[in-house]
Image 1 (cartoon, rainbow, N blue to C red):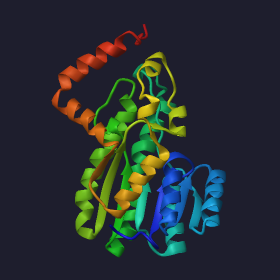
Image 2: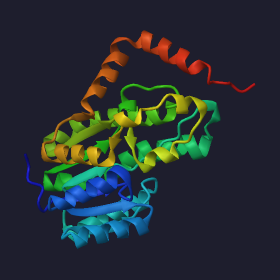
Image 3: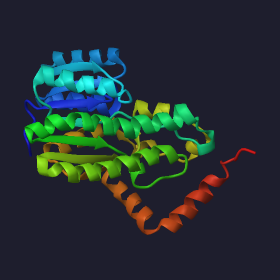
Image 4: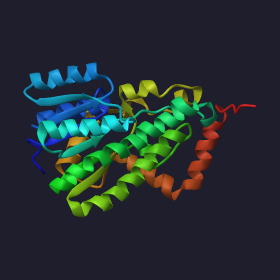
Length: 270
């Protein structure tokens, strides 16, 4: 496994959840961590915590949907540390509801902008430096919803399927220039992310049981594992591979079962 000591790591969505916990672990590994998110106050608190434990952190206020802010963050990173070794492309959010009930701008467009376009823009921004170094590793956060798309996840899954396809193509573009691309597919997790997804009757009845949910720390350890031993993808927990297998090989059955289960909760508009 690779030694991460001294590596310069950018973490987007670092103000909470997977991003914050991963940033702490990267710092514990001896990395110089660039913390990126919109909530600067939280980033500064996290940077203070990392520094008090002997680590190094640079908080940068950034919105992944604002291209000029993404480019400015990369410039600040290079100015501070001279290189970029790892990008953990983690920023994202979800809004789960029937498609006709999702707001076209706040829910649909915003999800695509953050969950897909933000991933693309940030990866694009770091590539020139990584190509110049002839080394680097981009780790994109996806979801098992990027393999199997259940009802209510129409836009979220669309973005995550996009991340999966984007990552595959980019991996094949970048590999001969010394840059690796990995994707992590977590299942349901107990994080602040869940509180922003919204609730309806169907979602209340069909959700991951608490005893099966990952923690942010669980996922963060997976991120570090992939950073140390790069691979194309990692599904966590491992049993979630079964959902992808069933969806791919028994698609018709999956359609019927899920459609029937959710039908009684769906009241289409007149």
